[in-house]
Image (tube, rainbow, N blue to C red):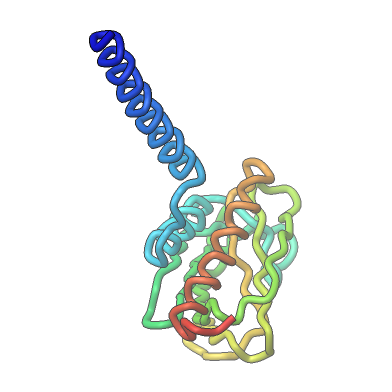
Length: 189
């Protein structure tokens, strides 16, 4: 009888430990599958990778004139203090592929003020741009050919391989907004 009780106790302990181990694995896998949220630096690096993929693609550029294409020759997205900087260089070509002009755009803004992100397709190309609008006018410092302006929005080009590319970029921009807002006012809503 004592051996039987000992066996029952050992079985109970074994199953109790096995259950605890199984539940621990289950919950840790559940937490892993939800994924950890990216840090501000990781989010900026992700957006940088997305915009750099547009380098080498052609876009029809406003102001280039008929028959001209503009090739994105450089793109980057990086942190600068509390702000972020989106830079894009382009080369405009005429129909014979002779370089007609080049442009360099630089947008500096705080992600805290992002209001909307919408997608605009560039007809006849494999790219699109995310039009980023802000809560108020004059929140984006814009540089074109060394001259500084204030802009109402940012046009961020990316490769449109499939619609989820835009959704991922949009999610990353709003995640960056949330992270920057929490840094600016950790006790705000």
